[in-house]
Structures are given as C-alpha cells and as structure tokens.
Image (cartoon, rainbow, N blue to C red):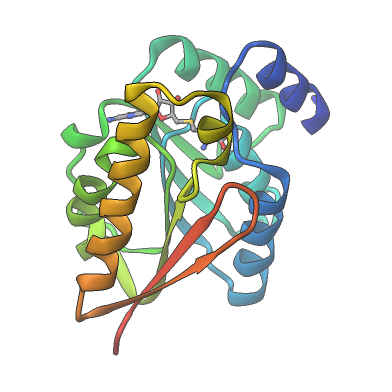
Length: 190
Ligand SMILES: C[S@@+](CC[C@H](N)C(=O)[O-])C[C@H]1O[C@@H](n2cnc3c(N)ncnc32)[C@H](O)[C@@H]1O
C-alpha cells in the first residue's frame, strides 16, 4: 500500500496544492466525532484529502470532483493504491456541470478560490439539516506571503467577499478557524 507521506512528497515536489496538516487533522476529527459519513468534496487534485477522509472510517463515502485530466488520473491511481475505490467516487468534470439531488453530511469546498460563493450557492441545498460546509484557504496565507501580485490581491479580495457573503446569510451561521490556511465552518440555523 502506498504511504500518505509519498503523496505529501509528490505534492510538494510537483507544486500540487494539498490541504495543510492542521486542516486535515481537524477534518478527520470532526468526521469521526460527528459521524459525517456522506461527504462531497469540490477539488480532488491527487486525491490526498479524499483518501485521508476515507481512511477515518470504512463507512465514509466521498464524492469528489476534479476537472483537470492529469490530476484525475493521479487521483484515480492513488485511490486504487489505497484500495478505496468503494469509498471514493471520483468524478472527472467541472463542478459547475454537476447536478445532484444527493444530501451530504459534509461539503468540503477546496477548488478555485475565486468561485467559492458560486460553489456554496450551487450545493447549499445538498446539505443535510445537521450537516456542515467547510471552506478551505480562507486566509490564503501562502499566497499572501509569496506574492503581492494583482492576481493574489484579487484572490484575497474574493475571499473577503466570501466571508462577507457567509456573514450575510440569515439561515446559516459561520465561524472562522485560524488553523492552517484558515477554515470557514458553516452550519444551517435550525
Ligand atoms: C487545492 S486543490 C485540491 C486539493 C485537495 N482537496 C487536497 O487537499 O488533497 C484544488 C483543485 O480543484 C480543481 N478545480 C478548481 N476549480 C474546479 C472546477 N470548477 N471544477 C472541478 N475542479 C476544479 C483544481 O484543478 C485543483 O486540482
């Protein structure tokens, strides 16, 4: 079986952005504690976070969506290497083309950062009443450290817009965790 460290090394060496250590550990913990077994992940990359979430419990079922052909092939191979094909449904598609009426305990948003509001709106009705939407990279720390380019400033603006958007929702409550690159935890107000 492939080791998780191999995937981490591959991601680092090939500049594939994968979830930070603190953030995945937080996800693993809440999945376990709250039995969040039906998971939708937006943005698979090489399958690293999906694999880690699936390894939490054999009852975990993940639908993960990725549009990049190279990433999908790598993710598929990694999922097979871990023997997790029965738990992880990898879909090669643009997120905006996906139509589903399935309901999830956890929706993990980790795809194009400029599109978070659209992702949220597209899938909010797929959240179970007691479910949670978790959005990654709210603080964009790596980006802010690395560059002051127009693009990175625009992305920081976009993330701030996303926070304002979340805060404006009356039927959802969000909290922001300063772990790793920043998480937004959003739940329905029941
Ligand atoms: C940060 S990476 C995902 C990392 C992964 N969740 C992990 O932690 O192991 C974001 C991925 O989202 C994909 N992506 C971005 N926008 C997308 C879209 N509209 N549809 C499908 N995939 C998208 C990118 O190709 C990229 O591989």
